[in-house]
Image (cartoon, helix red, strand yellow):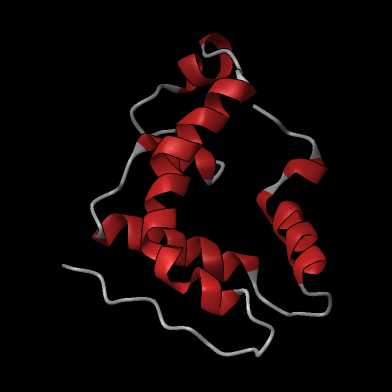
Length: 114
């Protein structure tokens, strides 16, 4: 797994946030909680989300995780697209135009079906 400090979730989030809107104060930890909660209630929960969030999947032993599963960044990117980004893109698509405006409106996400 990638352990370099510049590749962590927080650092990546801050980098992209500052490129998007310098000076904006959003807590990356809060977005991690929202992501986890939404995936749970939408029943999209998967081991892929755990890896995406920087955790060892619960069904994989420590020995396998540390010694036998080879790091393949290209494969992980494709898995993340299929299991994390694509489901989120479907939910967020109707709001993308509104978010990309510079008016600064707050957009509410649709209520999830429980």
